[in-house]
Amino acid sequence: MQTGKFLGIGAALSAGLLAANVASASTLTLEEYAVGGNTFSSIALNGSAGSYSSGTGGYLTMSWSGVAATVVNSGGTASLELEFTGLTGSGYDGFLVSDSSFSETGTGLTLSASSSSTATSGSGGGAFSPIGLADNNNSLFGVPSADSSSYPSGSVKSESSGAYSASVSSPQTISISGPFSLTTNAIVNTEFTGGSSVYNITADTSVTGGTTSAVTLPGSGPLTIVGGLVVVGGLAIRRRMKA
Image (cartoon, rainbow, N blue to C red):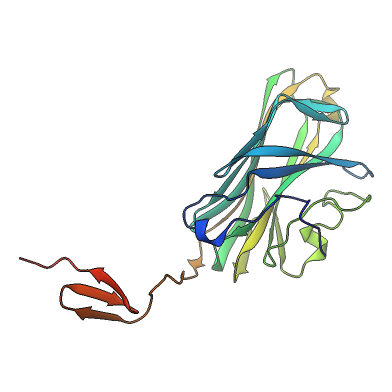
């Protein structure tokens, strides 16, 4: 399925910045949808270098004082975190953010979802269910049609043969052969509170562990020593000589 570049992040990470853990894009898109309904919308999260945010906002009967996303793409850990502060209201809504071109590849990797939820005022009692999604086809995910459910219509769960999903209680062992995308999907249900409580919530999707695929570096190849230089595939690197 082609979700289109307007869904999820507005641009991919550049290959030259993957190891440096710096995103080239300046905007992530937060997508909002009514679970089981036919309404969805989106807002821009602005920033750079893996940190994106927006101020006060709202969707349907929910509102918040701030929302942020954090991207980690170090080669050893890939993660995408979504955080709301001051979330209040009543409803049954989903919020998701996607990014592409994560570099943690190999076999025996673990896809996991984690969450935290704190009632900063009121009695609490709302439900919060994060879902972590990864796609080996490096596709972004979103809400492209009017038939949303706990897994958004057209999402990684149903549309891609290279798709994986995980909940807080069900991490998945996965194998990824190249750049992949992550989606963090937070399902929020505060209807039991009557909209009187205020929450800070965090949902995190991560890929860790396994045997990371080797990265091909410029000049990689057989090592040879010529005088005081180490030559790697034709690239000379000065070798420290003992006195």
